[in-house]
Image (cartoon, rainbow, N blue to C red; front, side, top):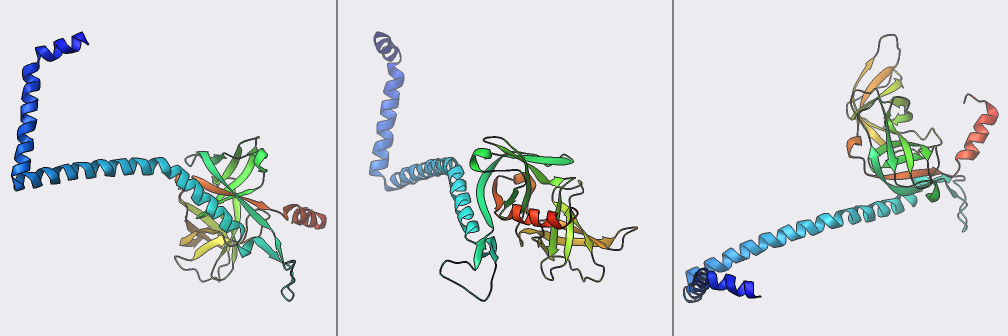
Length: 277
């Protein structure tokens, strides 16, 4: 305390100057309308900028929570979609709802690690065996297929990305239902190629490509991308089309894990007929 008094006493001219300057500015602003308006407008502008910065910072802090809530809402909407049910009889409907049997369920998850620059890319999710995640479950986003779960631990899981040399996906042209096989050729994380398109098909740039549903992993109709070009490659008799992917895999964050409740039943039936189906 004594040192504080010494400091003030030693520099009292400076503090006296600040006091007088403050009083002068206050009197000027009080008695002259122009100066009063100038000071009020200046202070308002400064405070507005401070409030704006505070609001932006607050919004940033709440962004993760908002994304989580949005992902949960999308999961709820995905789970109630009609495409998740297997229609067993189109002519009858009873109160117990035997007409529709649920086939797919969805669980939201977050990507905590991801790669796009390798020849074989993977991603890691923050949910694992304790949440019911198993290998061979599909992973999608609101803009396309992310990949397939290949390994799980108690609390985490690893998925093979669509950007992987071994990943193949059954897809179709939405406008006419023609089937083909999608594969990433490793040159661009925003482009894949669809093979085995019959040459009599009239292709157009912008044609939409979606999942065919010809698998035990992904439902039908999930957006993949659009056709940008096509050709018949040397030694082949089918078209191969370049597909501009709807999803940017470099920004993969919120995803949905797909569970096919009838997967094992379908597999067992198909394997009982032929191992090569």
